[in-house]
Length: 270
Image 1 (tube, rainbow, N blue to C red):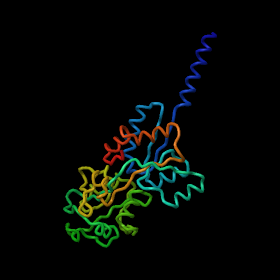
Image 2 (image 1 turned 120 degrees about the horizontal axis):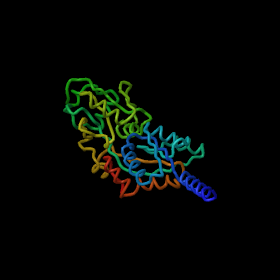
Image 3 (image 1 turned 45 degrees about the vertical axis):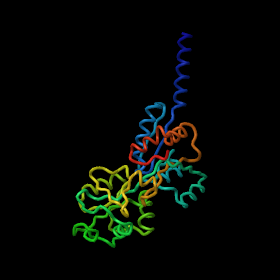
Image 4 (image 1 turned 135 degrees about the vertical axis):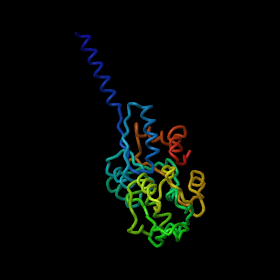
């Protein structure tokens, strides 16, 4: 009986230790970063079965809000934090730490049957402000342009607004979508639509459009030639520790996370 009790006690100690070491990490934010994160999370959990990572999109703005509110452990963002977000974090005693994990080319896309394949920044701005409303003004058919944009909580929208719109607002007639995947699907189903997605979302159902004569791809994005390139980030609430720190270092590792970034269609940093 004494041996049985000792074995039971030993089992309880082992079980408690295992549960104590098990880690649960919540990840949320940018749908642009999502393809990298999904590959990284799958591989990391396979190598670290004691760790559970749950991932959700929702946009960079929502991810940043979640890291400030403490409702997520790791925020994915396709833009840097705004001054007002940093100020809000400071008010709440939160000190977000950024880690750049990849470079992305933000690419305008049209339907594969659309003959238009090259637009200037000025032309794109005029389309998205509503000044140009017909494809014939851009070398296409005499058809109204269906303008598709991201919602304002998106880091992708923020980049587009900064680099294409010159801080002008997208006109009210644009159809807003909540994710890169939704934009890609909408454009692929409408011959007269235009949208923009992260490079990792390009597929055979979309035709990429050059900007100022330059094709958006990993090479032009990393060299700085492509005018709509950006860094992709993850943010932690303070300096990461424990398993969270281990996962962040995994994302930055040239043999692991950076390979996942490349496999997802983005430009690795290392």
